[in-house]
Image (cartoon, rainbow, N blue to C red; front, side):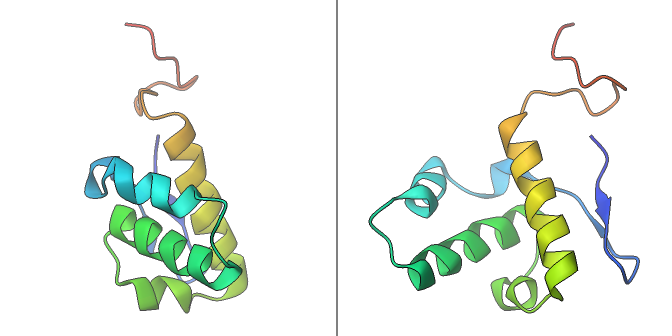
Length: 91
């Protein structure tokens, strides 16, 4: 799966090994306030794309949505072959 390009031309790629399963689960915990969830989500996504959490949180809204959507797409299909046009996981 190729990366996504932001409006300023920066390319984002996602490394799912940059964060732990505990960080992932902590981000999804339903008992969090909106502020806590946003903080944890920004921390996990920024780790996965190799950015500082504050820089990620300060993206323009359109770029933030694009980067976030791309992160979740990659996270939902972690075994997809990035070289395959169809994203098939078969070998």
